[in-house]
Structures are given as C-alpha cells and as structure tokens.
Amino acid sequence: MAVCGVFSPALIKIDLEAEEKDEVFEELIDLFCQKRDFSLREKVLKAIREREAQMSTGIQKGIAIPHGQTNAVDQTYGILGISKRGIEYDALDGEPVHLIFMILSPQEDSERYIRVLKQLSQFLLNPQFCNDILVQRDAQSIYKIIEKYEDSL
Image (tube, rainbow, N blue to C red):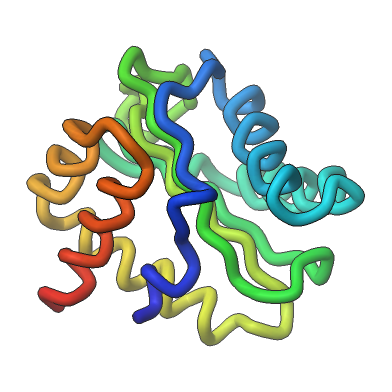
C-alpha cells in the first residue's frame, strides 16, 4: 500500500483556485499545513521549489507530480489537487495541468519516497485512472479510486 498509505481524503482538494504553478504549490502546501503544522510551510515549500527548479514535474497530458524531500516532515505524505480549468505549469508537453500529485518525504526515507513515485507512475500509465479521478465529486470518492487501482496492481 505505497500510494494509499500516503494519500488521504483530508489531503485531496477538488476545484483548485490556483492558475499557475507556484500558486498551486502554495495552495496544496497550505492544505497540508492546515492538517499538520503551519510552521512547516516555508521548509516544505522550499523543498518543492528546489526540486522543480531542476526540471518541470509536469510530466504528461495534464498531470504533474511535484515532489521533494525535507526533514521538516516526519513521514511521506501525498497531497492531491484537481483543477477542472487547468493550471499553467510549464509542463513538458506545454499543456495545462489538471491533476497535481504532490509527494513530500523526509530525506532519510528515500526508499518509500521512490516506491510511492514508482507506483504512482504505474497508475498514470492507465489513462482511465485520471479519467476516473476527474469525474469524482468528493475527496472520499477520489481516495476510493486510488485504493481501487492500488488493489489491482
């Protein structure tokens, strides 16, 4: 349960307000900090921005996987944001991003971090996975979709 173990309905946001990449980072990290601790905000944001500066994590057809490692977090977390209208993201394909799967991990938990990214990338190979998420109307239903795909691996 690599992916289900890091995502939760409380960290899924439908109808993102952000219109561009840096705004979406802040919006998702603010959601995370509301559930965890606002004192982590700047350290977590820094980790995501530093990784993004290396290369865009907007990987394919409306999907981005921003990720970063920082010892500001105590375990690996997943935050999912959904934008129906799309976010200007500087994605590799030049298209707007609709699904943002953000992964945060402590630096010493690289094994789990890599396992989550690998399993998530396997889900994304199936175009139906993203379609199934995009038609859901609440966080609990989206989480159930993630569980369904993880169970099928």
